[in-house]
Length: 519
Image (cartoon, rainbow, N blue to C red; front, side, top):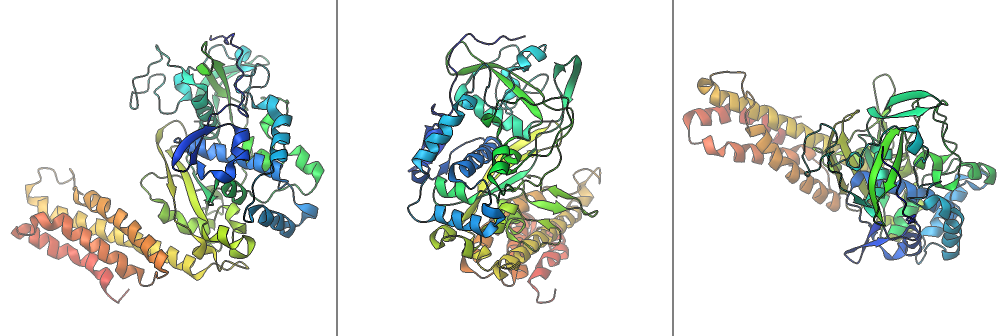
């Protein structure tokens, strides 16, 4: 088993520069305290690891709510909370420096990454409760561990490569929010030994965040309406770094006591980092189970919620092959019959925000394409242009007409892709059937994939162009034309051959029918 380093550097996250931010086109690293003192100067976070960014945003939202006093509803009145948020977003606003210093002075003890008693978002008991550590490779999702193959770098269990603490904290957050289910490093609590865990609360999801002109605006815009209606309720709604109580690993999991705890204290994994001999490094880690029961399901405010046939709501899964604009209607439409937009978007209409802020409102999404257990495919991030037009008329439960048109355009684009794929599959079979030794082998051929690789980027560019122009009428024809162009380009190489020309003629009509006035 690894032993803790005798180094004395606690790596205080409130004063040590570790968090990447964008500043005038450059990437800087800042401490948590500096992030809040200078958030109005910076464009946003510059975290290259999307699952870490999604987790960090939730942590920053929880801190923002406490610093601004937006962690409670005055007298239970949502309108009063919205008025206070409006004031915070007014031109020239920034975080109050005294409130920032007061918050971090109060909670500095819980913000030390390598503190022996209260390490940030970690459980120091694991040093005694785990017979062996997991290895630092296990902490980094892009590194292979155990018997997994090498894809992203030549790392092996026999030669663990230390991490800078500034990077390790980001991987720590990624594990807590997106960690796998199933087998894990064994942990013994009160004589009971278990070696399996449930998945992290955001595993395989698409996390959608409203964004403004500065990091300050982004943090205020992303605040969900709090559940606390009194000072007493707000004080019970604590984040892990705000108290020294340790989780009872064998007790059944309870519902989060409030919005801030829901954002920051729903992890299923327990982690402990081992500081390296060199200051500011991590040489080992243990990743294991935190609770024997799965936490109760709660509606995360940044996820799109789809409704199954039995009425159950599930978060929309991240799909690396699906561009963000195809989920735009799921983010903005309130009156969806098949689910619910992220709750944080419910209070982002024109009447609830200052006009300059509202006009620049856009969305940043973080996705991690994973299965529900252990396989990680890839992670990604995406940003939309300003979407204020789509929300400008969304009052009294009615969606903006343009937002409804955006959904219809997305439907038309996906139907055009289906026609394109179906036609090219048929064309390939017609063209190659006499030459195939095995009719089942490569029956679809390369044409559908080649055409879709050209069609979807063109469809996305066309969608944003039409949205910017405010004209999403007749989407069937507009996206049908793109599909027909893709069909013609992919099959052009065989057009001069009799069999190729016949295959094109017999199947092209399925795509060309989209240009007809008849549905």
